Length: 271
Image 1 (spheres, rainbow, N blue to C red):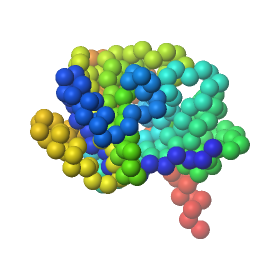
Image 2 (image 1 turned 180 degrees about the vertical axis):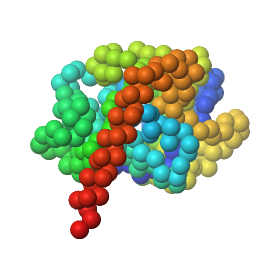
Image 3 (image 1 turned 120 degrees about the vertical axis):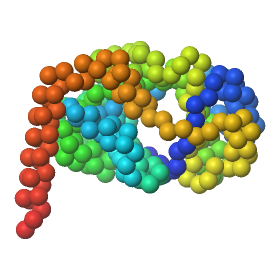
Image 4 (image 1 turned 30 degrees about the vertical axis):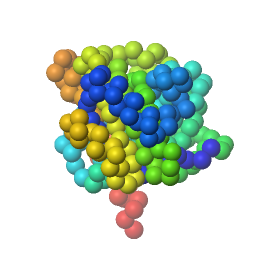
């Protein structure tokens, strides 16, 4: 299966249910509904985000650096243990997002993560470049699944070749236990009741007809990271779960392993 590659800008907005209904009707006049939105119903997306014991990637992301990256597993709905998932690498530089992903069996994806990239079986027909990059990330950083985040989505696609895509997510939920895509899609709510996250994704500028609608309704862009909000909620509501001695010990071990890996890499790169 070929690699899916996305290069685009992403703009996010928070809207209420009334504005969401109005926007859905408006988008229907300009765009086509995603094939997954059968009969106008949402479809579920679930994700496992990876980080180290000190939550370095998400802390760095919240600082809004010029460059940041994520490694995650994504499934549509709740996958079976032997069902397909997407291994995704998402990077952002100077506001532009690059996402590459490949579809592999869930069991093989878990094996790749648990082995820190050491167990890398051959996936016939899969994209080797994405897997090689994931392997390099896992060997360079002590990553492991730490966040489960799911949500229900309505999506619209441009009918021309512009590449414009608009998604509306609600019922965003998260958990830090049962880090298994096959263990159900329940979790704690991330948004206020009736609130939706609007994302506009385009390789070019947002079209005038859409910016005009958003501006006339006073819908303005806002920085929003699902995993970032989950991290902040966890710190606020259950701080000890992130800073307890066990996690601090794991974080210290992770940092030591990371230093050793970098030293090993330098020794083998320098002639």
